Length: 304
Ligand code: HMG
Ligand code: MG
Image 1 (cartoon, rainbow, N blue to C red):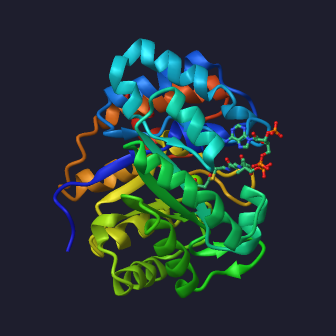
Image 2 (cartoon, rainbow, N blue to C red):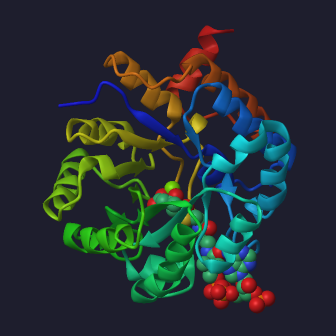
């Protein structure tokens, strides 16, 4: 069973740029976001309202959202942003943003490394954040990281991921994105994890998959999830991405690789593949290194 249409949740400007050694100028980030929207990506996660010293690459979040407001008008407020806590929410509310995403960890060690608190204490941070966001009329997405494996704890049991993910979702999220933060998942494990969430009462429409491509499995994993009925996939233009607090994480599933596969299956995305490739080639020039995506390389050369 697979869908006729898939929603791609583009995370390049956030997951991609949070992990770059160089800080990309705000105007270049804004152009990245607007080019991705113009290429037909229906959702583009723009930035993070996290602590600026924890992720200096995205310290210009407020300036970026202001610039996007000048360029896109009211619709800039629909762009989702990452928010870990009430301080981040206050910053998003000041700008009138309408979509936030909180991000929890399925493991104790990564919760400490990424959020500076333990597995249990992360909920004390998210609960008031989600409640206040919902009371203010915002939509909330929840991410759960380390769903397959953790660099410090090894393989993560499905039951543990389901318990954390369901609890996060039940705080009031509209969608739960399951993150393979370090890209160690394989296709059978994907099937098992989705089955675990379905057995716990969640529907596949409430789930999204967020694959990193460290072991080259991201596209196979996406295909496996597609067969389980998942219709929302996170991806990053050009395959940028990673997490500064999980050193073994590399880039996300490339948007272009995902679109190539989906269009090949006759599944609609609304995305203009050549426009995304041109955007990734342009961004690679800014970053000073080529995109790791095989589809970007192939199509960029075929357009030369
Ligand atoms: P903390 O140091 O424990 O924060 O950091 P705190 O609550 O103790 O506050 C300390 C100070 O920081 C206070 O200031 C706060 O106001 C300030 P003071 O009173 O001392 O002057 N502060 C903030 N300032 C601005 N914005 C904020 C904010 N929060 C507190 N939001 C915190 C805790 C969660 C903030 C920190 O650990 C943090 O920012 N972590 C973010 C790490 C991150 O962004 N990681 C990457 C994203 S997750 C990811 O990539 C995975 C994902 O892609 C899925 C996957 O692949 O699995 C989503
Ligand atoms: Mg990620």
